[in-house]
Length: 367
Image (cartoon, rainbow, N blue to C red; front, side, top):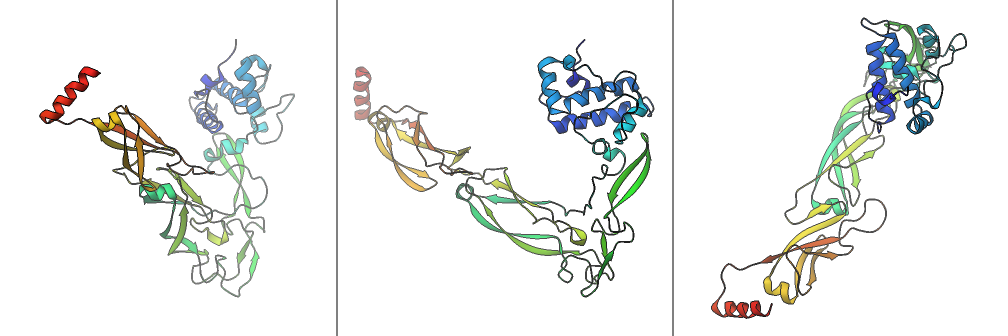
């Protein structure tokens, strides 16, 4: 009988790879056999589902043919928990069993369950500075045509004295005695999954593999300090409400010379009494008289480029849109602009003179 792997993991058929990964991790924590109330059969089932849905090629085949597309289970016939754990640690499946985790690293999947990162992949990993976000308010035309703003920030920045190294000027950098220059250390932790070996960034050198023989007195050896700074940012033409831009490396500085985080500038557009925006198109309203609507006329319309004379065709109806090509908001990426639409509203007078009323009666008979 074909199994519904999406139902087993409790995800939608359009779920992303990250959503599938999160669902598997949550269920694995709940049903692990070593936990109170755990269920090995259920754990095998969710693992089987993840092996398929976590692999793009297998997922594609499953969506087309169902769970019988490949005659294999999550653990294989007769495979047990110890075989699974050996495979998870990269030690082979044991016996004749093989395990496919859909191209994923179980160290990553269970990383935060173990209280550390995933398994080390070699090489040092320095801490990265924190990303920060600031909000900027623009008026309608500033968002349409772009603007440059100077932002004042108070954040963790590189130390002016040691330039972020954390070393007192003139002192030497020495190989870290904790990690012996590797930038990372091996840790063994006991979890409900058993003993798990993980690789973490060295707490002494923060992943550099070396440390200062004499710490900078100005920043205490961290290489960073809190200070105020200004950043100039160019907000591009066509940016819309709620969108943001990323300035790489303009976030907070990382300790000990690590990579700085990014700065995200989120845009909020002030409400305009004149203009409405739909993607790159602009809408405005214009009132005209019954006579103008009937006979046609030229009216002045406010656009984002300034005032413009617009022709009103004969027989224009209330609610009709007059299109001004290329008078909308510039496209955010690429050339060209949207259009400007004038929404016409016919103004009906509440009172008319006797002469006007007579003329309207004559018009009524003709119509």
